[in-house]
Figure 1: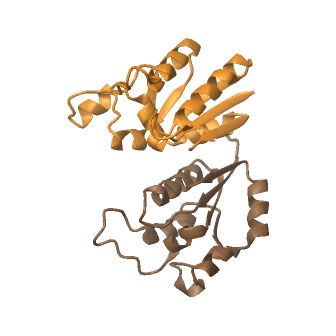
Figure 2: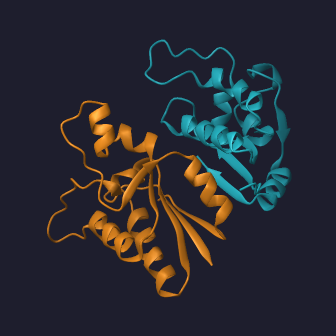
Length: 121
Length: 130
């Protein structure tokens, strides 16, 4: 069973409003563990998942920011930030937990077109 | 054509589950194959044997069970989704020292890897989210 499919995971939700950020990361890591071709895009409020200095001391959810670097470590091929969303939240490279590759709408469209599976969280 | 359906909604929270059920019935009626049903997130609640909907409402979990058993469909419930929502088979009920198991006959609990496998093996993966 060595079929490799391409999975595009699109995270759209803020880091601590639901379990969706964790579900997106679990899906990305699982697909990568099964040696699939995985990309993840952070767009809309999900760009806030990328912020440095998140503290979860007072909440019940795990620190999302600390999980972001695990993506590339566990063979998720590409991690992107959707630049129009980042601009909307007035974020720049300096705000993120690690270096991110920025993509615009047309690049996102291409990614969606080229992926076998697109999952939105 | 081989279809896999991903069901993300609980029977009562959105039209997702019933739409998926109707879609699965239509797939089979058209002579296609259901490779797998994957119950994910709130969709895990479709696998509970303990749901008792009012008599004038459709019993969606019972409809799933009947479809699954009559067509011998592979119906997988995501383990992480199921456990946190209190959907347990007998092995897990024992492991976590719970008083009762409530996984419906016909369903099995397994991991996200079953979804990845389904994505690889199916011609189409259709998600029912809302």
